[in-house]
Amino acid sequence: MKKSFIKKIDHLVLTTSDCNRFLDFYEKLGFIIKKEIHRAEMFAGDFKINVHYLGNELQPHALNVQVGSGDLCFEISGDLMEFKEFIEKQGIVVEEGIVCRHGVVGEMYSIYLRDPEGNLLEFSSYDIEKNIHY
Image (cartoon, rainbow, N blue to C red; front, side):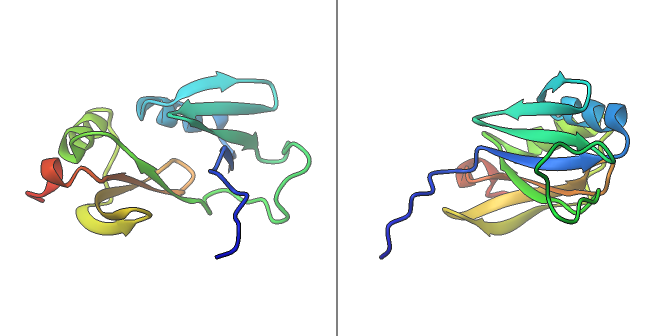
């Protein structure tokens, strides 16, 4: 096997055309928001998502910047049904789930939703004991 120097993902970048609506949504999910003039940072766990404002992207940036093209999966701790109920109380619509999927370490249970820009967000739990009844 070849040696891998890659340890983990530190951050990702999403682009928005409506900064306030976008950041409000992620704050409801539990992200800690740090807003700046030309960008924002959203923190959760041991990673962050940098948010660029469409038309004011920081350099360097992706070649084809566009909103709504992200497809991200976040691992949560604990009971997925409890998380699902929490976000629904925030007015966030679950698009699909709870469904069984396979992640980097094996079987997991997931729900799917979309952020205000249309990015697909998957929230998953590997805690099979707590989620097996789905």
